[in-house]
Amino acid sequence: MRIVLAPQEFKGSLTAAEAAHSMRDGVLRSVPDAEIDSIPLADGGPGTVEAVVTAAGGRYSFARVEGPLGAPVDARWGRIEDGRTAIIEMAAASGLLLLPTEGLDPRRASTAGTGELILAALDAGVERLLIGVGGSATNDGGAGMAVALGARLLDDAGRALPPGGGALGGLAAIDVAGLDPRLASTEVRVLADVSNPLTGPDGASAVYGPQKGADAVAIAELDRALAHFADIVARDVGIDVLTTPGGGAAGGLGAGLIAFAGARIEPGIETIATAVRLDARLAGCDVVLTGEGSLDRQSAFGKTVAGVARRAAAAGVPCLAIGGRVRDVENVRAIPGLTDVEAAAVESVPDTEAMERAGALLAEATARLVQRWQAATI
Image 1 (cartoon, helix red, strand yellow):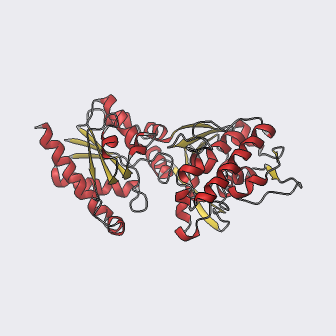
Image 2: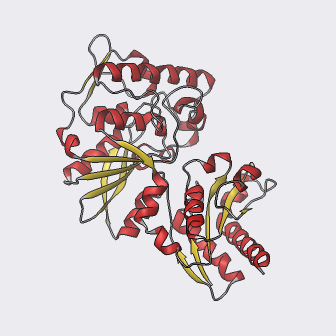
Image 3: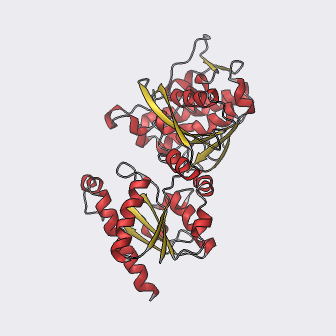
């Protein structure tokens, strides 16, 4: 029996490669002679660089950049296609996992380090940038990135605006005369797993602000600040980013990359699935297993599980999914192309135990799911 394993990271507990290893253990408990093809995936968040570099036989580079609250961090990025294409994760420079929970501050967090990573890639002579925008700690609309790339964001006294999304309400003017000219000749593609607009009830602040430490007051303030930022961008840069799908990705970094780097936004899982030749590797297999840390109603929109299920359906291959947690089960089961779903940890298992035993729980869930699928196909 030929089985493809195509999980993404289980956030906070397992990398995509570790998840695939645990799933492999589970498969072999049920099908000891299985032929297994492991394909760690990502959708633009953490794990994107590793997935693409591994699949394409690329290489890693490192740059010391400014972290989300200013402390330096060593960020890894990748190069493929003989160095012509760079793969960057904004999370490596401006991500949630770089800060302790008690240190989150979306009013002050900046994407400056992401801009510095882009500069490092440009200095290396790349022709194309693939930028994963999941896992951010920021809500600054890409303002910090823009400044790192040479733009000037000014208050009404002509002074440089402080970093962070909270300062954007005081933005009076944007000067892009000093923007790095190499951006004009560089293809920039944003790999996103969401299609949220910049502002509003489905925008960056309202939907993702809470996980970055924003309370109701901060969410309202940040949303107003991003709306004002979009107005100034439209006036001074000439690009309307207010309602662009995906503009709200990574606290508005999607919008900033469109405005200042001429980027286009695309579903990260589709780009990465193509890079790892997922369609070719699904051809002729008996079943594919995928998974991520949490399966819920959001999993149907641009996420890894939905992307794998869609491609599996096109190949006529059953698709089984495992979530560290599975919530809103009926909507998850309704994802097109998905055959069956299993939770690694039931709700009665405390989060701390679920995280500590993530690998073992995932292996056990994989074994259960494969056995159930086998029984249903007899």
